[in-house]
Amino acid sequence: MQTVRSIVSGGEPSALIQNEVLVLNDEERRALLQKAGISSTIAIGAAEVLAIKASLVIPWNKLRLLRRWLKSSGISLAGEERMREISKQIVGDNLKGELAPFSIMLPSGGEEIKGAPLIYIPELVAKVVYLLEENERTRRLTWYEGFIPASEVWIKIGGDKGGGTFKMNFQIVNIATPNSVHNTCVFCCFAAGDSVTNLHAALDRFKDQVCPPGLHITLGIFTKVFNLLEAVCCNLDLELALHATDVDSSSFSKYSLELQNLPLLQAELEEAQQAQENFQQWQHMWSWLVVQ
Image (cartoon, rainbow, N blue to C red; front, top):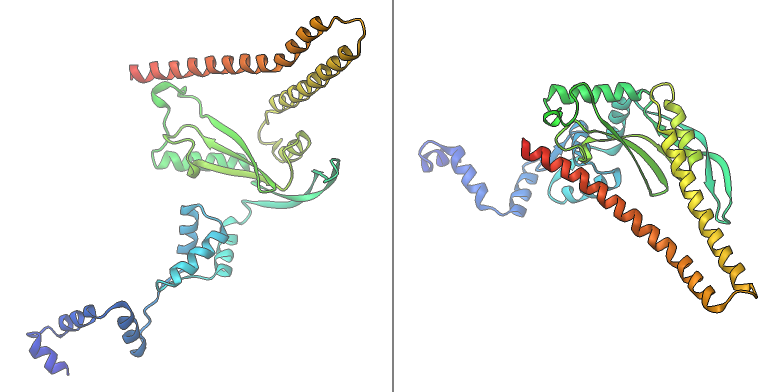
């Protein structure tokens, strides 16, 4: 057979074999390889799949769906158990988990202090420095042509509540795409609400490393409570005025209407002030871009 192929192909039997295989469709080619004892499946190792998972930023359940879909096309991914072993080795001491006391809302409306999962980066400063060094090594750091002072590095702290957990993250502003998901590092996550008690309980893990914005958090809570108190007092004022016998009906109607419109007017005023601040910021940024 090899002699015949050599004669027919003009001394290139391998080229003839390739052409014969290319004529077959996918099912025939797969059946031929199976009869020959040759595996037609492409296998991807655990480390490579873990790198794909990190690059695509997908959770384990989405990776399972991807595995089933690729398997139908003859691509086999390494097992999840092996991947988790490698992930555990990579994580090492970079993450710490514990059951911490958090305030949990009850269905009845009350609160209960009970243990809830908490995962965080114990060496937060070291993590920030490491990412800064990596961005510097890859020449991704930027100071926006002097918009950020040369002696400063800006770090943005954020939070996100969803799926029964609250996640705290930071982003390095000194790169071209600071809001990118690849530039977002979650440094703390706990299975509880974002109350001031829970925030302090989580941030206490970093009190020896960084200074959390406790004043801003407290002011935000105080503002929220004050607005609630103001709304309750407004409603109480309306009820008292409604039952007062010595109030002229026309005067009361006018007074009631003013009280009802007060929150709306305050909201519009705050929105206008915020719009003015945003406009000034964008005007400053635009003037900087024009100069550049």
